[in-house]
Length: 467
Image 1 (spheres, helix red, strand yellow):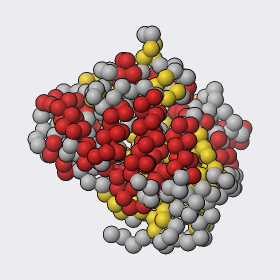
Image 2: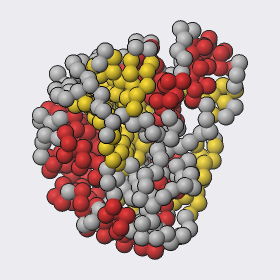
Image 3: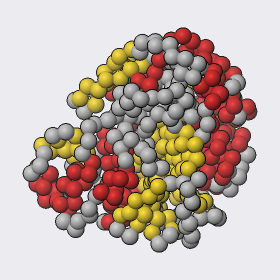
Image 4: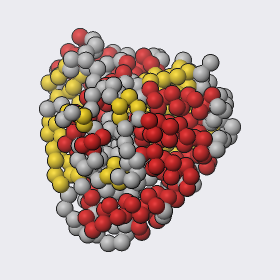
């Protein structure tokens, strides 16, 4: 394993930041009970699998980066989905659908043949085993509570649901995400019948239930001969641990997993900063320029009272339309995500992903813990937040709320609030499309810096800072 990064003297306040109030509340409660950053991160991901199911779920995958204040070590965990097919490829056909993202129809596939090997149960178990302090059942308990009762559906999540309804309303989704013939609206009760069983089984039987036990059997039965997922695929799944890679910006060092599809760290290294805001904006566009990609993701950041920190991002993909009724689980659709499937996938190997939670250090102390959601906008949103904090000196909250840009071929999409100088510089190179307000299209960031936590208003983000 590569050598760990040596860090000392944490300065971040005990805080949580997430994409939903329920998720943030759960993380803060775990910290108040004496839990570690890892404990809170696990509980928050599980809560997100109940309250943010438009974006994530227990049958999805993700990544975490963890900083241990006691040892000064920073570690990355890869628990993203794996390519199925170890028992043989069945060649089943997927169902093609198209989703309208900002006026652009993006092709996706759904159905049993798009389901990859889930990683979230194994990843959370590994995160807790390495750095957790509370009992496993205690960190699972809040999600069980909310799964049994349902939660208030976030208005901004309802807006996203309306966009991806062709996938979300398949199968049992029609009764989970629709009410009175229309997609579930903000403030309505979001409730997955059976989801309490899924989380309780994880609490009682551990992650093994999802790879060799009752939930694994249910997944294999649901897929049957219509997809490649098999008992062999589930039994072979393992979490991958590694030391992070790094990039520099001004006097700060950004560490992350470094093998994301969009190469966040390479983009940071390639960006030449400038005092002139117009020049800086055009340089960011140049660094970010690439074909558009999409994805449904959520992220959380947490720092505990000891100074340890964790950033985590998880995703279900668009979702496959395959449900496990007994467990209320919507299976992932990663094998149907056009921007992830490159035609070189090998059974048992990891699929690629744009997710890249990060920790930024200055003078060997963590100064920013951040994760982001939003497919290809993960890279652009994180880059701009890091620039805002490291280069412009904004707080995490200010950095997240600042207007963003996102380049696509021939155009630059921008949120309102950029200066006339910046708009003029961008217009000199591309068509500039000004959106009417802050929008989830531009990604959702959860971050913590020495001033405190920041949640993204674009996705209904929520934060807590412990006294």
